[in-house]
Image (cartoon, rainbow, N blue to C red; front, side, top):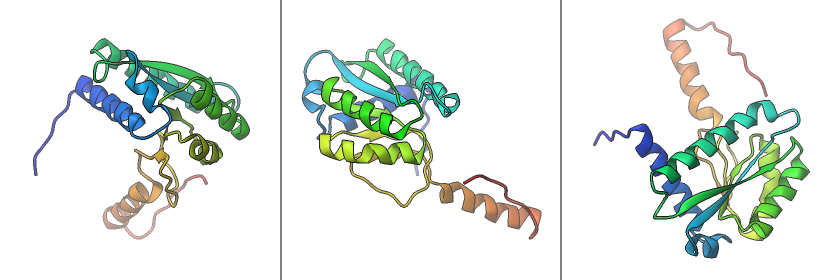
Length: 180
């Protein structure tokens, strides 16, 4: 097995390349991704409402990554242009904004959502518009959709290992507290 080491700049550039290449792979934004000097990516998170406290930092991180990728020359010679929309912590608004991003703004892909319900609200829109969603947070599993890229772990990938470690290292009696 080969050890691969990436510095922060290489990691950001590689991640950006994956997003742009994935976005160009057979989605509605393919033509837009091939023409011109920019690729539009939709950033769809709650910037208002009850979930905004958790999602606003995602937009900041995504915009920073885009700035760094663009400063390093872009991806495949193309700059990334962020089109930001507010899901307003309301699932129907997420679906409406996704439709706007895909059909009117002609984004190559959407990076967004935080809750399972907001992600699921996008599925009909993504499938109808042949859009692509990069869901940047962990999820509950048991869902696969050809229009959604789930780069994070699902719960059992971290919880099972933690429980096994607790049982082995801390004994048979312990409490695992979490939310649903």
